[in-house]
Amino acid sequence: MTETLLETEAVLRGASRPALTFALQGEIFAIDADTVREILDMPAITRVPNAPAFANGLINVRGRVVPLADLRVTFAMDRPEPDADTRIIVIETLLDGEENILGIVADKVLDVCDLEDVAIEDAPQVGMRWHPEFLLGIGRYAGDFVILPNIGQIFADHLNSLNRETN
Image (cartoon, rainbow, N blue to C red; front, side, top):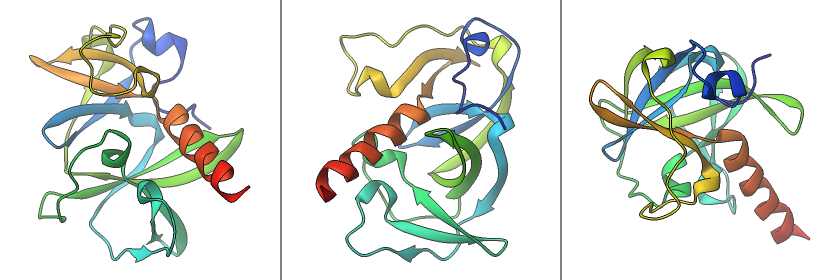
C-alpha cells in the first residue's frame, strides 16, 4: 500500500516519482500517481444528509461504495457545478493506519509528470490563502506553480472536526 499522497521524505527530497496534476479553480495540484486507482467521468453522486461539505457524497466504483471528497472546501474555493472536464480521481491511501479508497473531485485532470522535474519548496508562511499544514510544499512544473496537498493532514483535520462535533 502506498503512503498518503506525496508524503514520503524521499519524494520531498527529490527522488523521482510520478505525479498526477489536476486543476481546482485555476490552481494546479499534484498527487502521487502511484496512489491513483483510476480517473472517472463525473458519476452519479449520492448525497449524505448532514454530512460535512468536504465529504458529503458517495459514489459507486465498480460495485464498491466510495466516499467523495472535495478539496475545494478545504481550500475555501468556489464549487461550481460539474462540467465536461470535471473528473473524479479515485485514490488508494492510508488514513489512521487503515487502507482507504476515496474519490477526489477535480475540475480538470491535466497530466502525469515526474517529480524529479519539480523543484519543491516549503509553502510560505506569509502570503498564502491556505493553511500551511494542508500543504506539503509548492513546486514549479512547466512554468506553473504546482501545489502539493497534504492529503493525510487534510483528512485527519476533517475527521477530527467530525469527531468533535459528534461528541
